[in-house]
Image (cartoon, rainbow, N blue to C red):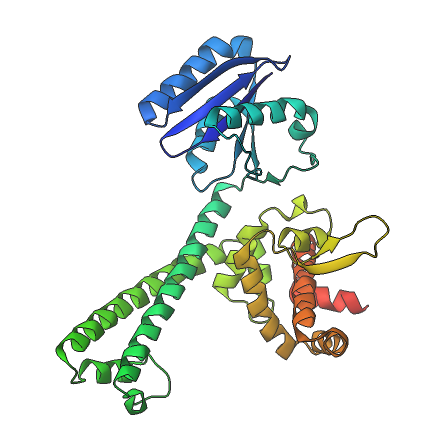
Length: 355
């Protein structure tokens, strides 16, 4: 078995290859240009991986790992291990990073190859293609929604500059009637130009949101896990798809609390010596979008689920509304785990919890 550590950048990768004895047998930098990096892996497979001897690779997670992971698999890499970026060292170079990664892989080879946790090392599960695509799709939808909000706020700010916000013909903005009114407004030349551009941007982003929503609906209907999540209060196609693809394979979480931990919904701990254990604020590890979506679902669930609302009120009286809402989010994460593990709807899971 050979152990390959890779420090990845946009224009190049730095590799460190170790043999079974832990000795470095190859260390070099390779351009990420397709012809050069393909030639490197062809030579590695031919010259270093003799007699069909497999190799495993470890690399740190970044925003463009996908193509390299796929390439490694195509070149007979037995397993690709993705890890969270380690703390910055005082003396940092790409060669040192690659050597550290290959040493880490070789030193913990037994546990890493078996998929077991390693103390002080956060391993990242590599999602399947469907989950990767749905994560990108829902992220695009979220970004488009944020862009729409920024455009609307800019338009409203322009109205306030001229104190004409009182003249908007509808309470809500934007509506068809309000946009038609805005297009006919008489304003100074530069303000009129700014408003025209903002209205054009708004029309474009509305069209983009509509197109994305159509794709999300189709993708959601094709996922059994997303269909189950849609049975939760306040969960539509977008929320169901976004949560489902961020859970991915629920069997990788042995307990319901593991999913809550994964999404950073458990309190941090400050404990030293004989001092009393102190629980701090939640860790906020994992997916920011998952926590944000759970926060939105919480408001709807508290209105529709009477038992959940009563439980929330009890915690609120003792600990305050902020801690009570986080507790509800954690409980909803537990319910999601139960729904996906058992293949049951929200109502069925909640009914079982009372019986």
